[in-house]
Every structure is written in structure tokens, then in C-alpha cells.
Image (tube, rainbow, N blue to C red; front, side, top):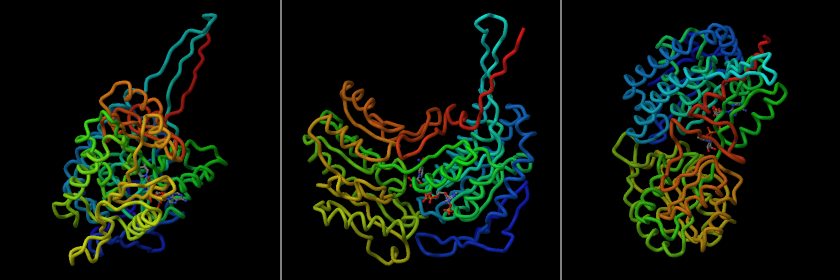
Length: 478
Ligand code: NDP
């Protein structure tokens, strides 16, 4: 049993009214832990602590801040095995994926520790030569860091690493669905020497604890990752105080396979990106567009590959764990039923796996549909489940039109061996990240974020750090 506590001003805290929230294993339904369920009061206390800690942390040199972050990264690595088990038990993903996520979060802390030292200024001579302009970057203030359940540790580390390196203090609020490993992560940073109040942890529902973090005059920056609908609410709630915002929202990534592509590697990459984390990724492949000429070969390879994926408890050697909740499974089922009722063809999966070992979890088989079109929910909405819908195109112009026919714009992928086609697609696809012969658009050194309804603001890279800094022009008369 895991029973983490909130961390406010460096101290462990329970909910003032004693409320707790139970976390159940999505593979078995068994109790994994109980976490305090805080609300507005705890969020306010955490913001107050962060406000108090801000002046000293902002004045701490980037090198000293880096020492704390490096120390925290080492501690997270030491705890990686334990934290990975927490992650798998609370959210279902296979253990090796959980371990990769935790180790990745340590790398993020190390990265931002060093990037914080490079918040360079500028120095220019005025037109008339009688003054100098110094441009400096300073931390915004207290940041509210609100994260979702699908990558509870990794996505939180993107925010915490950048905020703390920039000199902001922060309050982290992980998703109520997956708060255990995220709590261990925040605890590790506190244990690694972050002064009290620099990084606080509030656990509780978004509608109360989260809303207070957004609405309170004590937070100056909101960094949110989650659904587009929640992002819209947050933007409206933050508007009266013109708070700085980064919104990382939903996605509907197209995967284009051109006539000249290496079909084998495209099929392998597509299956991997569609079914990784059981499709519960904002950059998961949501829509596959195949050139007519490669359809048959691609489908054969993809069905074979996806058919070999092993489904089961994340504690075993599997490729797909259960979906995180029954709600996710219900939506997956509904999207498939809707597609089939409109003429799609089921090529693989389409149901829960059979067997006693699956009876108590939210398992679902990797599913491949073809003959889909854009009238179907699976092509318009985020399924967030293990479904790969496929349709065909005749030329690049049509591929781009179909790929961009979505309100989202987070990631897009294209496989081709033509340089011209690669550049044509990279320049025309409307999304914050484009993978050319790559099924990943995440890299520590590169900006990650969305266009359109996938949000705005960037995480990772020096652009991620910028999100926590304000520019100041200091004009020096001579
Ligand atoms: P939600 O929007 O439901 O929740 C995200 C976080 O926001 C949770 O911590 C939640 O708290 C909190 N929250 C909910 N309502 C409010 C509110 N009114 N004020 C403040 N905070 C609030 O998203 P999910 O957790 O369901 O995550 C899945 C979504 O995240 C998908 O749409 C996915 O595409 C997106 N996502 C986007 C990524 C990106 O980088 N663009 C990456 C990963 C996921 P609680 O749940 O505890 O109530």
C-alpha cells in the first residue's frame, strides 16, 4: 500500500478534513494506496508557501539551483525501481515503460539544471550611443503545475525541471488518477535539498484544488497538460489576472505513408506509436493515411505486428497493460462501434481479451480498422485507446488535406524516401511537431507543444525554460 502525503512548505500534510482518495489497480481492481484529497484550502496554503519561498529561490544562483536539481535526479534514479512499480500499479503501464518514464524524468531534471545556467541576457548600444540596453530574463513567480495521468512522472518533470531551474517556485498538482509515483518524484526533490516551499505538492480534484491554483492571485504562471476542454476552462479562469499560460492539450496525430516509403519500418513504427501505453498518449497515432500503392503490404505487416503484441498486467512481461480506467475502455468501445456502424472494417481486435486473468481489469485488444472516413468519431475525436484506423490517399496534396482536417495540431508523422516529399509534408502539416521517418516528436533539446486546439506554449529545450521567465529591459543612460 502506498499512502503518500501532500508536501507544503517542506512538510508532509494530510487533507484538513481528513478526506482520502483510493487508488485501484486498473489490472486487478485491488487497492494500491490511499492519498489525501485536498481542496482549495490546501492549494491556498501551498501557494502561500511558494510565494514566501520565491524571493530567496529567485535570488539563488543558477549553479546552486542546478546542484539541487542534479541531486534530485540522482535520487530519482536510485528510487527508479520502486517508483516504476508504483506507476505500473496505479496506471497499468508495463513495468519497463514505467522504469523508462521514471529514468526519463531524472534526465529532464539534469537537462534543465544546466539549461537554467544559460538564461542569457543581451547588451546593445542605443542608436544615438548615449545609452545602453540590457535585457535580462527573470523568473515569473509562483507557478501552478497541473498534470494528467497518462505520463504522471515524466510530464510533471518537464514542468518542475523548467520552473525550478528558471528560479520560479511551484505547486504541483498531479492527476487524482495517478498521484502516487508523481508524489514520490516531488518528495525526492524536497529530500534532495530544495528549500521548504520551493516545490510543493497538492493532491486533490481539479475542480477544487486545481481550480484554486488557477484562480488564486498567488499564482503568476499556469502550466497545464490535459484535455482541451479543461484547457479552455483554465484559460478563461486565468484571464481576469492575465496569467502566463502554457497549455499542452489533446491531439489527433496523422501517420502518412507515401508510395516511396520503407513500408516495413513504417508499419513497425506506426504499430509501436499507435499501441504504446495502450494508445493513451497525446502523440499517439490516431489516424493512418496510406498511399494506395502501399496499402496491401502495409496492412499485412501492421496486422501481423500488432497481432503479436502481448496484453496483460503491467507487472508481467507484456506490451500493453490495461487501460487506465473503465471510462477509457468505454470510449474506446464506443468509437469502434461508431466506426463499424458507418462502414469501417475490423481487421484486428475490437474487443476485450478473453480469459480469467483479464476479468477484473480494463483490458482491450489492439484494434485495427480500415475503410474509415472522417465522419467517424475515431477520426475526429481523441480515442485515447488502442485503436488504429486506416484510410488511403492518392497524392500528397490529398494526404495533407486529410491530415490537417482536425481541430488538433500536436504531432504528425510521415514516412517517405523522397526528400521533396519530406519537405513538402514537413512544411504543410499543421502541428507543433512533425516526425519524418520517425514516430516520435519528443526530444529534450527540442520544443514540444501544440498548434490549434492542442494548445500553446512549449515545453522542453530552452523554449521550455522561457515559459517561466519574463524579459526585462534595463536602459542605462550614460
Ligand atoms: P484532464 O484535463 O481531465 O486533467 C488534467 C489535470 O487537470 C488533472 O490533474 C486534473 O485533476 C486537472 N483539472 C481538471 N479540471 C481542472 C480545473 N477546473 N482546474 C484546474 N485543474 C483541473 O486530463 P486527463 O488527466 O484526462 O489527461 C488526458 C488528456 O491529456 C488527453 O486529452 C491528452 O491528450 C492530454 N495530454 C496532452 C499532452 C500534451 O503534451 N499536449 C500530453 C499528455 C496528455 P483531476 O484529474 O485530479 O481532477
